[in-house]
Length: 488
Image (tube, rainbow, N blue to C red; front, side, top):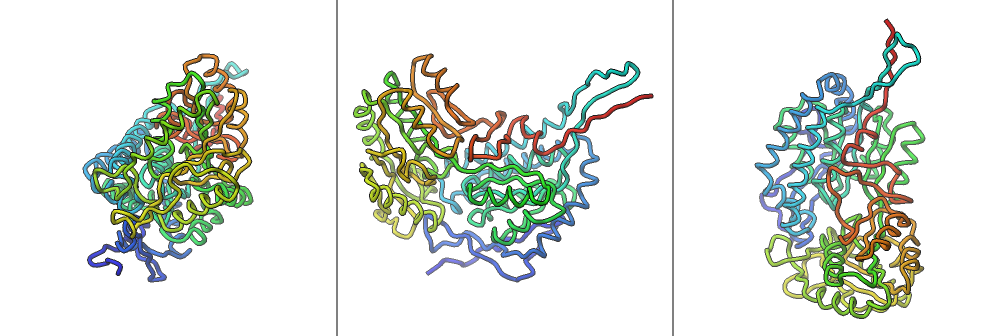
């Protein structure tokens, strides 16, 4: 029986007020570690709520953009301070709502706070350049104008970091925002918005509307008063976002899937490579867009690497992310669990050899959660489904190759190009990898997952719309360049 006693109902945040849905309907956010536990009830919203949020954001943006960058930054500093006081509560909510371990959730929450402070500082940095004019009596320079109202659509796997790394730059550069979080992580997202509310931002500058992607997400795509859309999610949905935004002339930014390789060269530190492969591929239950998915190993070290990898994977403790001893939590939802299991079945059907795992984990009291064993395949061909499609689960496909050139060819043999890593001591191998790897993020002797907040982030090929997020690169999406020519 589902536990729902004293469970809070969370409202939309529109024009500085907490508002229920006009449909008078809610949906339950379920703890993936125990399907009978409800984390909270969230609004099933209609386009009426979205329209109200857009109207409020449009009205508020005119005054918000007139504030100095320093003044807008002060608000972000306040949000960061409030979040810091609530960090443990927010992290625990994240673990209960989408399953990642509490240690990872605390790290993500700290990252969100750091992102807010980083972009608060952007309010005091330059936003244009002085350009020489051919007219000696004229002054010419560039400045930046905000887009206006920005729609932000975020996934469930990073329910704190991703909304903040989109919202913070949008706000510091003078935009107002409408956040549509993933249904599986809406409670955590609303806790973030509570921090913005307490910081006293002007009404309408920040809004959140929860509900189905087919209603609220599509509404953001179609709304004529939303000037830009920043999306993170699957490539299938991302393409629909891009097509819809392009059709009405809105600016869009897409961060989509990955099928990220790690290459283990003949001279690699195998212990380091094993540790990073496991961390990059299996932490957060493999539910990262930058997670390692393909492990491409040179033949002369393949067997030794495989033995070390299997031995370490067998040590992984699966369990509720709130328990200290748990290293890997559940999949974020039953739907995601079934998706991962279907890919495992497909790998077996296509002829890959299952080395370890491959089943739902139900022992040790885990039957009521959406747990799957960490899974290793070998004898994987690059053409197989498990080597081509994003699984978004704790599944690693081992591919044996003869040369570094073959490794790079296999690494690039997918439609995605988000992140990649190599383990080698050879400077020539490093340089070849940097030059020839088609990925927006390349890492040497480090796991494929992870990017620092001050660095640009985004992918090549079908992993993105070829724009970049985070760091100072964020200004390129959230503003437009205005060239100014002044003559007395």
